[in-house]
Amino acid sequence: MATYIELEIVDVQNSQTPNDAYVLLLKEKLGERILPIVIGLSEAKTIVLVLNKVTSRRPTTHELFKNFSDLLGYKVVKVQIEKFEEGIYYSNLYLTNGDETIILDARTSDAVAITMLSGAQLFVESSIIEEVSIVPSKYSENEIFNNDDEEADNQEYDLFIDSRIKEMTDEELETLLQGAIESEDFELASKIHEEMEKRK
Image (cartoon, rainbow, N blue to C red):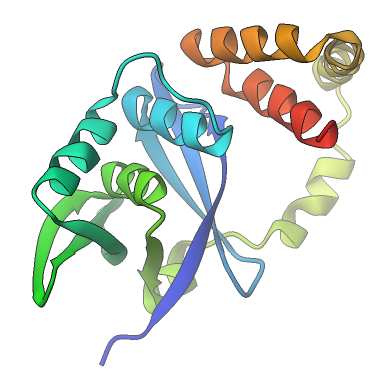
């Protein structure tokens, strides 16, 4: 019998793969292992909006799905990542309506976005996380010694951005956050959200 591990959404980062590709980082809830999944722009936008608690100006495709299922009386209760084969994750979306349960085959990126909107739980089959997860501590040494000129420039730029964000008013941060998400600068959006959270 398959066993499942609960996951939580950690972040969305730019990918080194072709344009409009991003990396969704999922972490086991009671551990340190990270499950990286390459996702597209549409899914990344929805996930970043929810992570940063920003309401989109018009419904995304994932919001439309949730609104439609709510209208029909179906509640998204969980997503299970069932299989990893030839670089592709396979997931099932579970919806309930009273005693009835519907299981839908879904792309993992779409399923995660819908799960976040619904506040549902996210699970992965244990053998998958054993096979493809990353343990961050294993990479800390490489990160420490990766001090080339480009990284130094990036750090200087990050410090400048951090200082500018701290000087902005709450209203200016709200406007900048919307712009960062619409321009697909998810790293900047994350920095802005962190500053907004500190001020609460």
